[in-house]
Image (cartoon, rainbow, N blue to C red; front, side, top):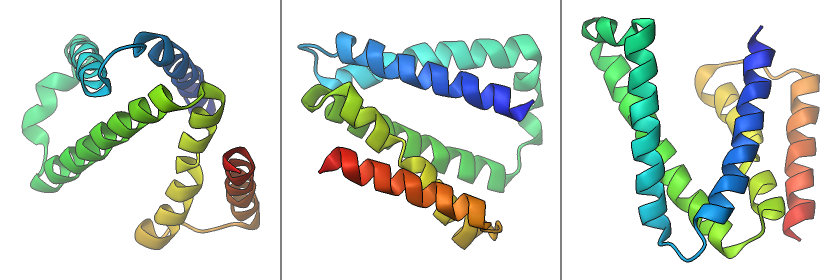
Amino acid sequence: MWWMYALLSALFAALTAIFAKVGIKGVDTDLATAIRTVVILVIAWGIAFIRGGAYTVHSLTKQNIIFLCLSGVATGLSWIFYFKALQLGKVSQVAPVDKMSVAIAIILAVVFLGEPLTLKTAIGALLIIGGTLVLIF
């Protein structure tokens, strides 16, 4: 079941790149990021309330809050740099390079989370890195 959500994530990430490229034409990328963030804020809180997750906010631990906030900072910075890259480059180049985050996440998960690195995962990460380098150069 997880893979269906992952595929939907990939589909919407692809649509994000296309919609953003059209939407940022002649627009300050920081303003574009701010607008995108407001839309996401409304949608995310709406879903949280509708599905009941918002009512469990009192159960968050200090660690939950700290790391969710750090994740939010990382997401915000990612979006700011992504929009700037999209404004300057082609979607067909920027989007694949952005997806190198998959290989970086694998490395970070092994180093910081102690996740096992299988041969299959290592080969996949190396192929992503190699493909990214081909697109850059």
